[in-house]
Length: 144
Length: 144
DNA sequence: TTGAATGCAAAGTGTTTGCACGTGC
DNA sequence: GCACGTGCAAACACTTTGCATTCAA
Image 1 (cartoon, rainbow over the protein chains, first blue to last red):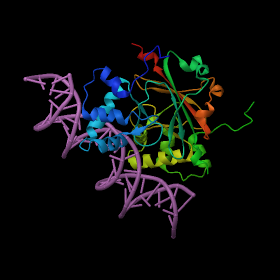
Image 2 (image 1 turned 60 degrees about the horizontal axis):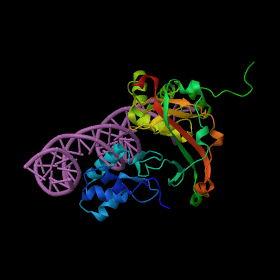
Image 3 (image 1 turned 30 degrees about the vertical axis):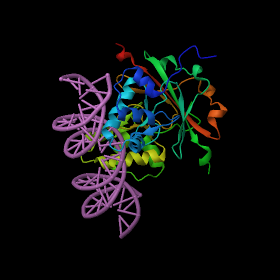
Image 4 (image 1 turned 60 degrees about the vertical axis):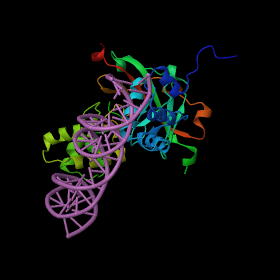
């Protein structure tokens, strides 16, 4: 059987579907961001894109990442000290597990989210739109 | 009746108890950080400290904040774009509620944390040490 | 007295911007 | 063709660092 609902396509295809003006640079960046479960810094995106398109500039990387973020195709995450990381897995809601020693970040899908609530006095008149959970610990390779 | 257990004292007192070398600058910064439910940037700490001690320098503020963080008396948070914020409420475990429009951050104590777990396949061989929850929404003053 | 904290200024990261040139649609 | 994306370099925002001076213990 085939899926009744359309699967989220590749990032590049989603961008074309939005009739987002496509250039070699933008396509390359989108391809870099199509690897699974990555959380790259702008500099890492730049390096990877540059190995395919040597004349690409940092400015274009930053501009493009900002565009993707404001389109909601990519999410900025600040889970580790250092530069902002870009999470392209925006179509699939997920949370993160971070190794406190090596800084590795992996996507996770926790259980029990529905039971997470705020006390009314904490919530005040605030309307909650999203909840973000970060698990921190030591990954397998970082146990002493 | 008095508390059987010693209450967490003021930050300044906790620092003295550690026999941390006290100076006018450090005491002033600790006092700035003693206000409840604050999440100041380094610059804001600098400004407030400077109104009491005009000759204090940014370097001292950054040095002192880094010291407090490595002592575990203050926690760095990155919940909003912009500079790092410093949360002095390190003695009392808590989570955060962030207004997506105005950026206001308040401390909260959610229910249902115990039920939050990772699927074994997500967790792998990682030992979880802490969980951090961020609620995002619009505060009362930011409803359109 | 003495090792540690401070202030200053310079340097280091990470990110944004202005503008002339190039290019997808 | 023209609006918009790009590259470059300069500017900007935030933070760290080296060193001479000052100070808490």
